[in-house]
Length: 297
Image (tube, rainbow, N blue to C red; front, side, top):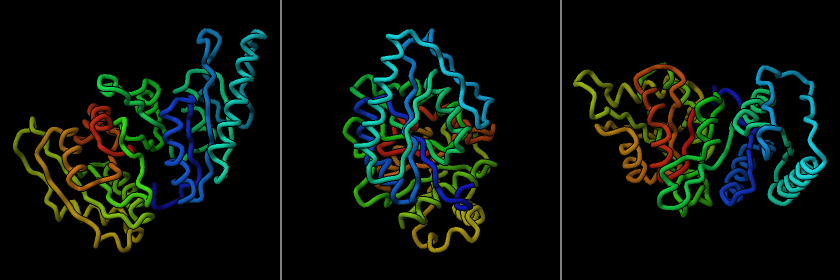
């Protein structure tokens, strides 16, 4: 229910890759903008047969039982923890942060920590590197997008794309249909637009394969956005535009993002089985094709 609460807790999973390090200024900017605390998380899953995922149902105060590693593996884990402490200390000295290392499958660890800490936002890279690897999302990112209900902000999937402009977001593309999930997507876009003074383009895409039928008008889309924000969106109207396109969803979003010079795309993740939740089946393609960061809610 964004626009009804502050963004206070950011979860930033790291694996010490170049993609993780490149995303640090992005995480720092968001944390400073919203006075949010960052949890820097690493999943120790070096030897899969040793590492059991934490119990997702356990959201209590007790810590999970420590895995009894061999001395050599325990030393590796201790080294990883020291590296994580150093990474957080040097990279996040300007924001409130904490460090957490957990044993288990990374995606399941992320899900467990989100539930345990009641995180407001997950920020993570997609690792789109190279001409051919750009066709694939990182497996951990893909699992998190599928399994975790918390909003996820992923970096642009292109190797040399700037993650966030120095001045912050200035143009936001919000892709929705008028479905049960639209209000959450509207509120998320409105939340960032209000914080950054950004303009918003509301985009509705009619898939090329869809049979002719009634489609919402620009006035209906604008009205739905205003209704979703209620009194939480003062001043946004002057920076609001609406577009209706007939296109394949990923390609249409990419085209509109380029034409609107968007630096953030906001989409739903299809938690409900509505028409545009078919975008869930397109979500990986949307993130791969987007020229900028994608916030999926």
